[in-house]
Length: 197
Image (cartoon, rainbow, N blue to C red; front, side, top):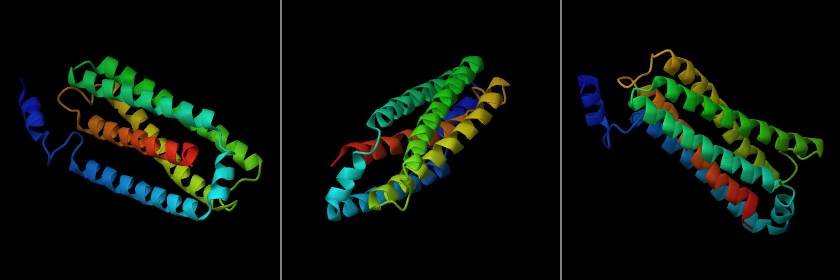
């Protein structure tokens, strides 16, 4: 076993989780931010139950559910990408990252259709309290996914060229952690915004 691998394994502890402590601090802060937004959403919903129920009925649950499955699938392939990279299989790892990017782009396209439909019907951020939260929360998440896709495209080319390999997985693990955060946040946004009354 190489010294780099030994150091990598010994560093995977509470203080040095996969991807490093800094990325996990960022993830924690992002999750807290979205959690605060969802708490505020529910407070407003308690004060305006009719408005929120009527507005929620205007959402496309089919697209919301599809996007949930899309992100979960993308997370699975990103986990495979890290797995194969650690095994020294750069080519397969790069392919898994490419599949993850595909599903990330699919999420963005489907969300774009949903946004377009809302705008065509004059439903913007100022429409009412429900849609103020809808646009802010899902829009902020959309930006995160867009950023995640851009990062993964970079990871794809660097992994395929061998810059990232079994002895150099740190950046790919960090990217995977960020991507899984996007999955996790959506798993909270979807039921709260689209399903719960």
